[in-house]
Image 1: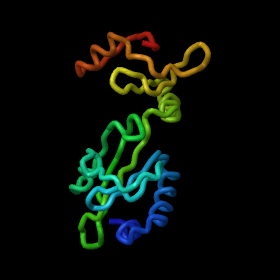
Image 2 (image 1 turned 45 degrees about the horizontal axis):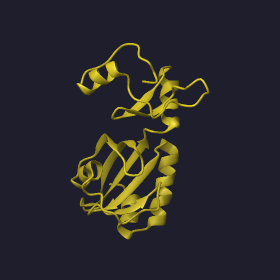
Image 3 (image 1 turned 60 degrees about the vertical axis):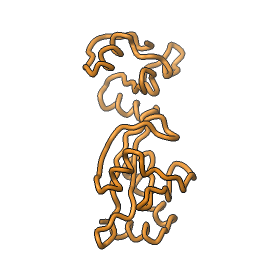
Length: 171
């Protein structure tokens, strides 16, 4: 229970909520935040002006609206692939009055560049069999997104096994 945030949500003070969200995003590096009411109807998106849609059946919001904080990697609506965390929002009486879903866009250059700096390794993120973000580049310096996963790696990964070895980076 966060009194200030909870009170803003109960009052539907979207400007106040957005100010708190922007501050939290700046401090944490989170790419987006979605706030819903207790039914899962979107009241605010920090990355879009689209509001009013029902996200109560999406995995992140559904868990939060049932009182469970969670984290998961899921396909997004306006973002290809996201790592999300969600949490219920409670009022002073302990009732769930909404949810907050925050996340990182896994298809952004900044995300893979950060991981490369952290691990000193080349990084690729795949959605299915397609590379959606990577630090790998062609000879001209452009990133090799849109390419397919190496066949040996794909066989192992899609069988639920780890893959270790050298591969052709562009598929």
